[in-house]
Length: 139
Image (cartoon, rainbow, N blue to C red):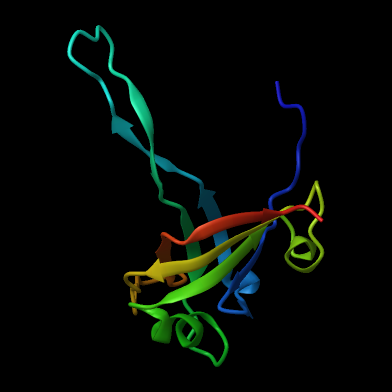
């Protein structure tokens, strides 16, 4: 049973530009790679923490207008940047315990689909920012 419920309407900021009005999905993943440390004689596999490997994946409407999706992301391919995601737009500037802001600093954008067109549908793209350092602000 759910202990708390919120309507998902996240705030998204890439390289200090808000893409909230173009975003339909945002997933922040905090992962630490598992390194096997099982020794001879072990009867079960044993793992220890390796390197952190954070990701932020977003689904965005593709817009070619100034300060929108393409204009913001095109120059970031192959570089590192900072991405912020909060469960509310207000959490980007004034985070709290119920509106945390997750910031991925030094994350890498490997690729950008420059066009994704289907007749009769709005153009959307999925992008993933990889690596970097994930911090969480709650105040």
